[in-house]
Structures are given as structure tokens and as C-alpha cells.
Amino acid sequence: MNLICDYHTHPQGHEVRPYTIELLRPWIERCRARGIRSIAFTDHDRYLAGVDFGVLDSLRGQFPDVEILAGIELDNDPATSAGGLRWVEANWDRLDFVLGSVHFFAGETEMLDRVGKLEQFESRGLSGAFEQYVLELEKLISRGQIDCLAHLDLVKIHGLRPHDYDPAEFFLPILQLAKTAGLAIEASTAGWRKPVGEQYPHASILRAAVELDIPVTTASDAHSYVQVAENYDRLAGLLQSGGVTQPVTFHAHNWKYV
Ligand SMILES: [Zn+2]
Ligand SMILES: [Zn+2]
Image (cartoon, rainbow, N blue to C red; front, side, top):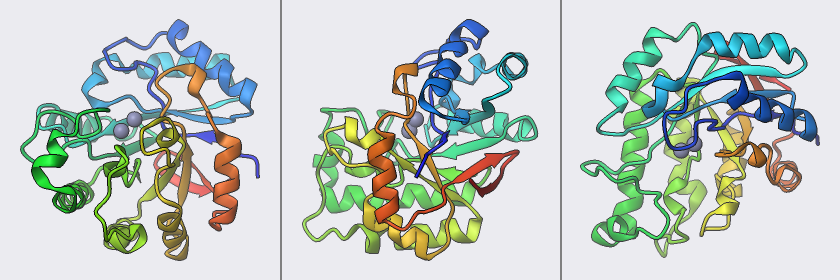
């Protein structure tokens, strides 16, 4: 199976770096080199000041062979996500694709996925942390204005899980909410770069999503152009064995099978 879409990328990295042709060109060249025919730029909404729809239009003119989706990763940051949500609402028609993600437990100002930072997990206990993570996902889904859930089981990032954790059973209620809300989920290679050493989401969650007919996108969560489509050969094998024979493409918030 050839995977031809990368729908989770961060050209700005972790700061505001306004979109220019120079910033974005290496990403498209990397797509060409790796056989990616459709890419979504999905910088974190806290860096929305750097997003420039005019630059994306120019880029589309220069690289007509690669589909370029205007996107954003909208999360539950207590400081910035309210503004991010307003921006997404105001720019919905110019955006093709909005990722929704949970990076924060309620009441915290530090992201839960900072590598090596385990205090938020120790204070909650692993079962408490996993349950609170899912509560935040429920809020994110009911808030709306998203197309696809990013790194669905991110809470496992540190390689820690409750002793009785069954991934598919634990996330089934979230998958059912996603199905009702018409959301896709992503299959992401980013977890292979993290302490957990496992893609997002767990294979059993992917299989449960397939059974529910939830559309699945493919993603690297690249923070540098060199990570575009990273580990896609491995991901293709995993999708095949999980029954995801048809990942989807997006355009103007609508998905279709590749
Ligand atoms: Zn994220
Ligand atoms: Zn991301």
C-alpha cells in the first residue's frame, strides 16, 4: 500500500515563524521525494499569527503536483485555545483541515507530553491521568470545529499505562463520539520517536475504528521537513494488518478514500 498523504506537519516548529515560500518549499520538495501527493500544514493554533493563506495560494501555484491543505492543530491550551477556536471559526472556509488534540490535563499550564516530565502523571496516578485525558477528549469533541482527532492515545507517550489498561476497550467511547461527530482519526508515526516507541493509536484502537467505519488519515507530526512521511513503510504494514486498506484524503473539510 502506497501512503500518499501527510496530514500533520508543523512548518513553524515551536515558535511563530511566518509562512514564506522559503520556509515551506523544502516541505513540498520532501513530499515530491517521498511520493507524498497531499500534505496538510497543521501548525499549533498558538502560532496562528504565522499562518498566511496568501503564501499557501502562491505555493499551490508553484507546485501544482502536490495538493497543499491549509490546516491547524487546535488543542485545549488553557491560555490560547479560546482564541484559536475563534480564529478557526472565522477562517473555516479558508481552512481545509482542522486537527483536534489534547495536550493538557484540566487545570494545568504545562503540556502533558513533555518528554521526561512525569509529575502530572505521578500526582494523578496512571488510571487518573488516563481518565482525565479522555475527559478532555470528550470536551474537545463536543466543542466542535475539528475534522480529525490527532494522536488519539497520546497519554501513553511516556510508556506508562494503568496495569489493567485495554486500549480498544478504553477508547471505544471516544471512537463512538468521533463517529457520531463525523470525525476522522489519524494513524501517526510520531509515537515511534517517543519513549513509548509505539505509533498512535494502538493497533487495537485502529481495528476498532475500522469496525466503526471511522475514516483514517496518515500523519508524521513532522516538526522538520526531513520528518515528512517518516516511517511510512512501517506504517503501511501496520495499517494493512489492522484492516485500514483505504486511508482518506481531505479537501475543504470533506474526506474521501484515496
Ligand atoms: Zn499534538
Ligand atoms: Zn502536532
